Image (cartoon, rainbow, N blue to C red):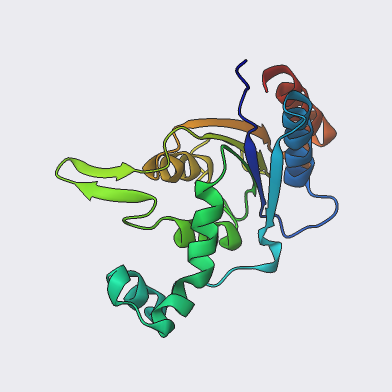
Length: 200
């Protein structure tokens, strides 16, 4: 008798708000929906609101030192990045909460991307260009904004996220957006929640 593998889900929140966050409300909805479909799923949570280290000279030097030549200082500089990459490698489904701050993604989410976009680990260079190494994963992105219309010429968040996820091999990406909440209030949030129920 065959058994269906139990999926692993990684939830990533990047809103600075712990309460009253529209993007967190959408990631809540996504997780609830995924849990209903996969009751045995393993769910890990990574809340970026407390911040992550930024790329520094020490990090760059460590990253570009061959692994078998790294010393304790190199390994210490890369420890957080290595843990985040391992967390991402181990998951099947990624749920990302991404509010739009000043037309782009929060700095904490960009810091996470800088920590996990690693040559030789999540992508590699070939004669035909870079190839992502995290194939076969599914990503859901829950976006929220006060005034920026998702998909408009001033939205520098959704296109970037789609591109960078594809760059590391995650091409199956689905977006749910509650945008322009300052103008449309609860209407857009409820519409996004309904879309999640209907499509996930």
